[in-house]
Length: 543
Image 1 (spheres, rainbow, N blue to C red):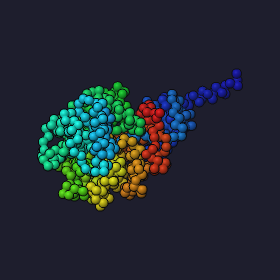
Image 2: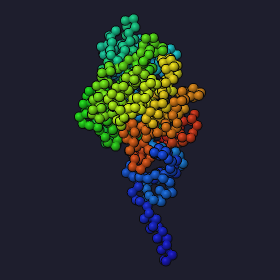
Image 3: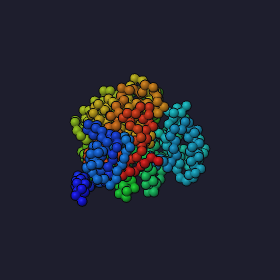
Image 4: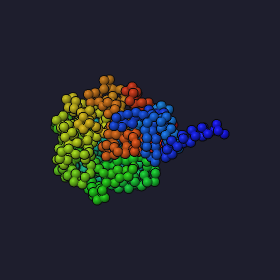
């Protein structure tokens, strides 16, 4: 019996050294913490959905008694990816509509819409994703074929950027649109006295406002479908840009039920009822939902020639694009948002739009600040205007895949000289020392690996151009990863709760099959997510 005492003493001592409050131990991993020193570890411990320790596997195994152990098998682990600019709900709705992304011609689109109509026989036909810039004939289409196939049923098909659409005559009739009609901040294309069906920017809304609102089941299905796809690519937080205030309660209810686990940073659209809602009740904040900002549109998109430029388009004489509202509107909104202490996030593509918005921001912000007002996209910024970002702590929120998607035709719109200062992510990052990254999906693919690849390698998925696109503005791998994690969290005022694998933060993380910090650049688009976790709970596993 005496021989057993030393063994019992060792066992009791070992048990006393352990802390019995841990839910999960993640071990045998290459953990990129993305903390302030960009340190790595091989294990971390989770309790009540948050990280309570980060370090070495053997040390943490000795110290903590965990109910569950996740052996990462030596695979790389990163903080859950954050997409700083999406249209998450719109993407979910689009999954239930006609997908036109990648269509190589107008005839192919018409065939796709026709096939869709045979299986979906009621109501409006809504499609999205066409892009005339990838067609042999790079011109806007005409509605004649849609009119022939659908003389009574309304059809509207949105361009890939959401800033232009084509509608058939049935849809135009419902909206009451007439040849020669004009609208501020938009275009209703009329050729030889006849409508072509092409609508640009504000003109699109004349038609879309006539589409019946989706019912509750459709809305919920859209959100949950978007969530499934986003979890599969490692996204754990998305910034949804431009929602109505009515969506806040819908999202909150789904999250409360546990159905919607995706964390969301919601920007309300630039509408009076949305300002009234948030100003009256104040910022809305839960662990899964943050509503404290407004999305405003400065101009249109480059692909549809709606971006507002300082000098005319290189491929359209005497045409500079346009602002979607007059300057007085932006000044009024900026003052109102500043006075109430909220965040302003403004879409600006062209150099003229960026200059105007930056100056409006400067007048409202009045110098250095921590209000984190954002310019969404900041694609074409005149070199002399870049300084505004640093002088007024304005945050450029950019989408690297826009550069690699646009580069083949952007030179036609801008000319080679002006293109050199466009998509200047490194220059923009230097202004404040950080930059949030996103995709703008469904305009671009939802996959954050494409974001990382485009930011670092600056090539398209075909590996072009061989030397990369304007590589002086490429980001380092460390900068790109921060842009998708801790810097994206900071853009949302959430850097103390997410964006890194650190004590006290939510246990949102992903396990990848390859290390994006070391793998060859050409392999980055093919890196896959093995598992995705939110609050330490698995929400996706690769089959």
